[in-house]
Image: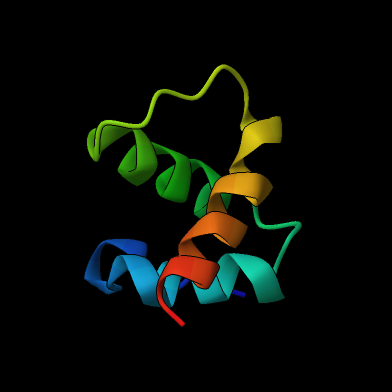
Length: 60
């Protein structure tokens, strides 16, 4: 099975993908990289679910 092209996905699409495929480490790392590129500093990947949830609430 091949991985989707994460670089072609918007951050919103990638976030939705990660929520559906929580075991896809490559997608999680790509999302973490985008989060950090936006200026949010992660201390660990364990913070990512909270940041995803915060983003979902802000976009409602």
